Image 1 (tube, rainbow, N blue to C red):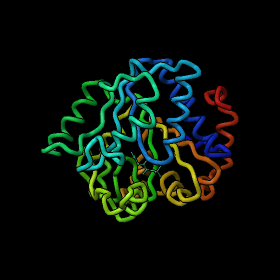
Image 2 (cartoon, helix red, strand yellow):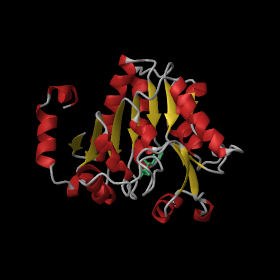
Image 3 (cartoon, rainbow, N blue to C red):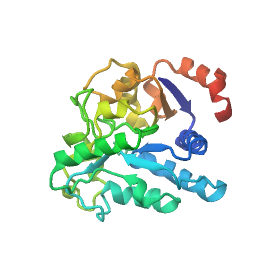
Image 4 (tube, rainbow, N blue to C red):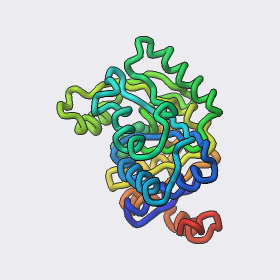
Length: 261
Ligand code: F6R
C-alpha cells in the first residue's frame, strides 16, 4: 500500500483523475470498478472535463459499480444508477450497455449477486478499482463484521451509514436499510485499486484503515493485504496518520510518481 497526501481535496481528486486517465489511455478496453458518494462527485467532474477538453475516450471501457441500494429503481434520483448516469456516464462517451451496477430491484437478490460476480469474471476481472471509505470503515457497503473473503451479496447498513447517507434523500426516512455490495473478497481480486479519501471527518477512520490492525470491524483495513493499492488523501484526512513523513518522501522521490508531481 502507498499513501499519497496532497494539500487540498482538489489536488487529491486531480491526482486520482490523472491515474485513471493514464490507465484508460494505456488500455482503452479497461474494466473499471467505480464507487459513488460525495467524495467521487468532484473526481467524476474532472474525468468529464478530461473527456471534453483532452479527448479522454471511454468508448471501449466497461465499468462495474461497487454497490446499489435494495428497492430503489434506477429512475429514483437517489439510486446509484441515477448518480452514475448524472455524474459520469452522461458526460462522457461511454456505451451505457457496458456500464454495470447490481440490480437492487431484482426479484431474486441472491441470484442477482451471483450473476453480477459472473459478469465481472466474464469481462476478465476488474483492472482498476476506485474506492472511497465510509465513516464506518466500509469499502463498498462492506459494513463492520463483513467477512474479509465475502462476495457480492445483500448487506444491512449500519445506523452510522444510514445517518450519513440519508441526508441525500428529500425524506431521510426513505433511505433503504439494505444494499447489494461487492464483497471484500471480490474487491481484493481487482488488479489495482485507488482509494480517494478527503476531509477531516474521515481522518480517524483513515488512520485505522491504513495504520491499524487488519480487522473486519474496519473492512478498508483489508486493503493492507492487497499488493497494488494507492490511497490518495488530502491534508485534512491525513491529520491522524503517523507515518506522514515517510509517505511524503515516497511521493517526492520514487520515480513512478514523477509524472504526477
Ligand atoms: C459507494 C461506496 C462507499 C463510499 C463511502 C464514502 O459506492 O462505495 O463505500 O465510497 O461511503 O462516501 P462519501 O464519499 O459520501 O463519504
